[in-house]
Each structure stands twice: as structure tokens, then as C-alpha cells.
Length: 402
Image (cartoon, rainbow, N blue to C red):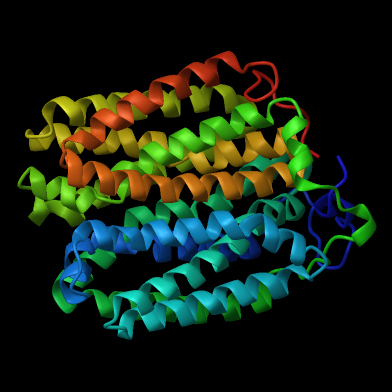
């Protein structure tokens, strides 16, 4: 597999020859992942308040997550092609600076269309971030630790869910949601300095080395992984986008921040387990992740009026969800290399947008109680595909890391 990530391991600043992980650059990339998820998902925790202040319905405000995800999904491949020759750190810095600007405008805007335009801009920046993180992590780590390096980088996702979103929800309740977005801007400014000082500036891909991204669809295992990505992410976002509305339906609006904290802590446990085992147990972890989410959905579908069951379901959901980004990014890169990674970013975010849109339709047509039933029905075929795709997509033994 010919990729720019593997071609330049001997370049300036590389640390892949070491047997140790370079913690500072990996944690900077982890913070970039944190920033991407925090910017994306923060409206879910303060959705009713944002809808009220911008004078729109909650289903309309939920599209703030949808448009972000659409922008990320639609822009991922064109941006990857256009910027393939750029130096990689410059590209990441530009994306983080864009987050800072977009979140600042969101914080001060009182106009729904303006807010949505800058949510779209932030979504494009997220497309850059997601396209770069896994490649950077693989380049920074020795081959036998690449799965762990990806897990450390992707830990920013559950960290945002476990700490960032609950904290944002709590601060939004105390001081208003606008202050929360300004705090995210402050994090972005700090991150700009950290990346500048810590992360190696790898070269882009040589023009003659580039291969058509869509050709990766013909590689064994890639389509199966992308199917799992699409349906798993769709299922997650149908429920997560409207989690505040779902909890309100069952008289748990005062517990929103605690429920999200429980979900996030379980996600952190999941990412730790995944990081420790992904290089040896990718298949088993993916099966377990899907099964846990199915059980959580069934519990919420049947017993959401029992608060204790809701908390147990959030633990199971978090344990399933926390490591899934690492699992699926590792699986698609094993099967399709960097081209597979670009396809994953597009698929992930397109179906994330679909989750917000489908959730809005379900909310208006059937109410919040329809969310867990929909998730359950979607995840059953995902489990079947993961179990069946043992030859290439989710093999018992991973191919050697590149």
C-alpha cells in the first residue's frame, strides 16, 4: 500500500523508529479530536436553550449538528484531494483556527441562518481534522504500537463526551450556552500554540504517488467496514442528537448533565480497553461494542421511564460507543489504507448528518420514544455483518501494521 504516511517516516521530526510513544504530539492530536467532537456535539446538551434564544423549534435547532456533519462528510474527499500536497501541520493549524472563528460567531450570533452558516464552516474544518488524525498517529508511532497511538488520539472523542459536553451543559445552565462556545474558542487558541510547538510538520503526498480515493472501494473488506460505520453512526446520532429531548420526555431534564457524564465516563473506560487490546482483539471488540449498544437500546425502548435503567443503559451505550472510532478507523485503514480513511470520514459524517435528520423526522412524527426502537432495528444487521465479515473487514488476526 503506497501512502504519504508511510513514505515519510524517516523525515524530520519523526519518532516512529523509537519503541516509545511520543506523548506530547499524540495528546495535542487528542485535544484536536476533543475540539472536533465538542464543537460538533455541544448543541445536543443545550438544544432547548439554543432553540429558544434563536426562536426556532428544537427539531430545527437539532439541524445544527446535521449541517456540521453534512459539511464534514461532503468536504472530506474534495479537501483531501485539494490539500494532498500541503504540509500536514499547516493544514491542521488552519482547521483549528477555523474552529476558533466559527465557535466565536456561534457564541455571539442571534440569527439562526448565520449560526448555521458557521456551523457548516466548522464542519469543513472537522473534515480536515478527521482525515489527518489517524495518519498522524500512525506516523508518530512504531509499527507495533500504531493501534495504541490511534486509541490515544481518538481518546479525545470520549473525553469530550465525558467531560466537555456535560461541563458545557452544566455551564450553559448556569451562565448561558453562549459562554460555553466562547470557552471552546479559548481551548482552540491554546491548542494552536501546542500544535505549533509539539507536532512534527510532515510533508504532503507527492503528486505522482496519489491514487484515486474511490478505487479503495474495490479492496476486500472496505465496503463491509463502511457499512458498519454508516449504520452504527446513524443509530448513535438518532439518539444522541436529541438526548436532551429524550430525557425531557421521561422527566429527567434536571439530570441531563449527570446522564451525559455517566455516558462519557463509560466511553472513557471503553477507549482505555480498546487502546490496550485493539492491536490483538479488533474483531472481538467490534462485536462486543455492537452488542452492548443493542442491549442499551432495548433497555431504553422498554424501560426508559425507570431512571435506574436509563443510567444502566447509558453505561452500556458508552462502553459500546467509546472505542468504536478507534476500532473502525483501524479496520478501514487495515483494509484500504489512507484512501479507506478518507472514505470513512465521508461515510461517518454523512450518516451522522443522517442521524440528526432522521431523528428530527422521528421526533415530529412519532415522538422521542421512537428513538431507541429505531436504534435497535438498525443495529441488528450491523452485528450480523461484523460477525460474518471475518475474512477481510474484521479478521480474527489483524494484518501487520504498516
